[in-house]
Length: 124
Image (tube, rainbow, N blue to C red):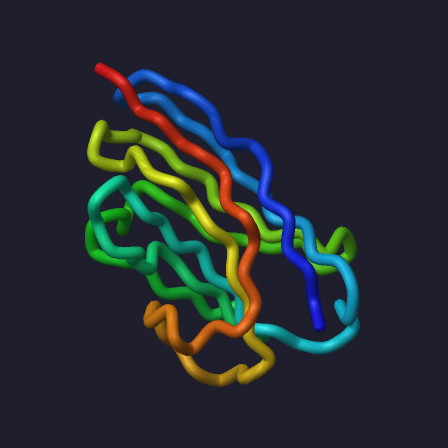
């Protein structure tokens, strides 16, 4: 099992940047597919970006070119660098992991482990 703890959320003006982090604890010696998801009030959870154990990445169309997912395996930490933020990026951001690697997907049902989330608020 792995435990995930997000940090780095906050408030930022539109056009600004923010980086959220996700620290992994527990069985971190295994390889995992990692992902970032977000959920705005009244909306369904949506996949934002994913990175597999081979460092391959995939992004939602809504964030492509603005967000970058990366990981530091030595620190067992996942990052999401968010640039050119828009008001519609406001949401609770969740980190997720799954031991089934070799599958690129932003479908939440393919992730077994979840963090508690960190709030990102973008204002005008």
